[in-house]
Length: 219
Image (cartoon, rainbow, N blue to C red; front, side):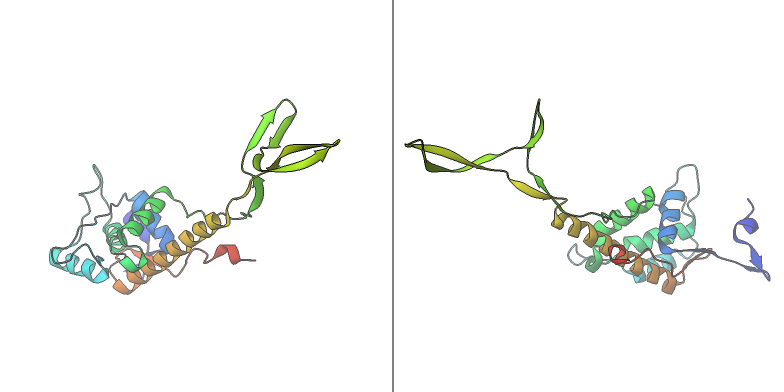
């Protein structure tokens, strides 16, 4: 496909390819195979580390030329807009998760995945252990105490047994999954704003399209 066929022209002006931020991330990391680079600037300590888009702009300006991206893709070409996206992800600030979140965002994009927020998950009370015999499955019980009872005129000590139960999936597990999705969504919002306000993209235009916020609250 020709360059003009990919991006088109309107009145002689190149028309940028419009992508939502999640689609742009997947294009950069999955299609273009962009790589994260997370170096530590010499004058910045590990504590409180975070690039920010300003650092990306300064690094690009210092080059004095377009980023060719060929260093990452053996036998191929990594689009310079994909490099800009990767550099922006690398600049996620500590307040949004820093390096850990940058790696997570890149890995999800590379796999074409959205964080699992456990849709439809409802905690259910289930036995902690189930024993199987020839009669089928039944909840395992444990001794929780003893009682003295009078049986046919004689006192006997009998075990008091109970079936331990738990909730599966546990409410905290569901809460953690949805908190993780919300953190990812907030980072994508930050990346989108950075790419739009930075004006560094030459052939890709990041639109306002975002994944659903708090999808578990949708009717």
